[in-house]
Image (tube, rainbow, N blue to C red; front, side, top):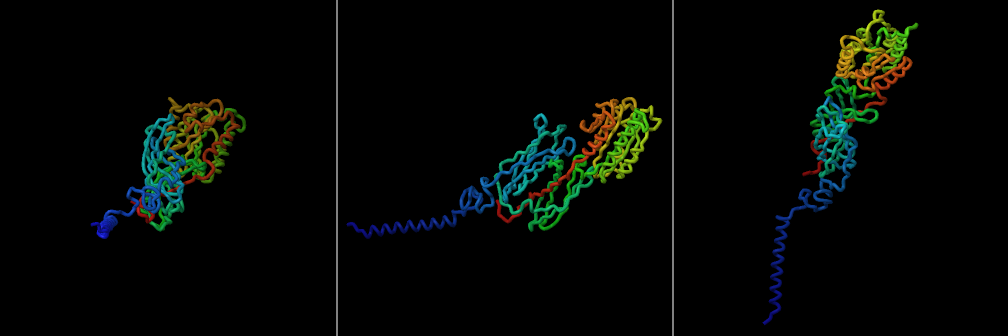
Length: 460
């Protein structure tokens, strides 16, 4: 006999059992199985815009970020066969940076062949241009003609509260540029937070914005709201590299006083009178912080005036120089003049902050000392160049040997030829202009925090 009430009672029993087990399973799931969405579970959940990125996560999704761009990259000479590689990379994201920017510097020769390669990883803060530095890259005997930097795709972008504006540069001073260069800078950490492992890179640009040299230092701990003095050094002199007029110049003029210098005769004798007048004008055009010395040569070389800042007095001295009568039939010894000048540059009178420039003037061929006067002079010139001395040569008239003057000059462009004495003043004015370029050198000092994060956000 069919009893409807018994059937529905069984249905109720089944539903009750199902509900009981559903409640038990739900409780087990919520308390023992289910995990709250996190930023580290390799799934896109919660308010994330991508897998473990965006929303409330520390990591920012790559598709929400502008990729960094390379402004420039360059190899800067440290010494023969050793270069520092520097690149400036721009991050246009206002508050997003990365702790893991991988890069590769590649240095190429003029023929396109690869000289060297250096890889690394650096921190890229937000909202500015930041330098990337790799020091002391060996190139053997090759000179880099092109330097590139390749940036790997960034996979971990984070929000940072501090950027380049966290630090201010209060002062900077470059000293001993021609001996043991040292740049001292005062910086302040304006943030309340301490900064650990602060990498600070100093790059010196010329007035045209071309990078000339760079150095790096690391401050292990830079406390918040404190000031520190940091020091950058270079292993080789950089006065010759930095051609800004802010760097003083020590100049020695080596003047030919052999018998041929009055070959035109007259009263006063020529060409020596015009030569000395032009040389005196050059001396008097030097700047107040420059020094001048005078070497003269005929059969031998003599230091007629040691380095001094009295340019007006030396200008008068130059105009009063005369040819020793005993030298009327003597020789021309360019090598001795260079050696005398080199010794003066090595003396305590040389300004350690100044570049060294030697101007050699002659109107004839070098013929002293025997047996090979040209080889003697070339060897003396090489010694001077090894000491960081820039040699400029001026030849007057048809009696000079162009190839010889080019060989002792520091660069073919630093060999001048005057066909007559009237063109000497223009040559000296050109040399004055070439000694330094108008405009101050720009010293860019950029700190980057490569240690702990500066914000309080959790990160994996």
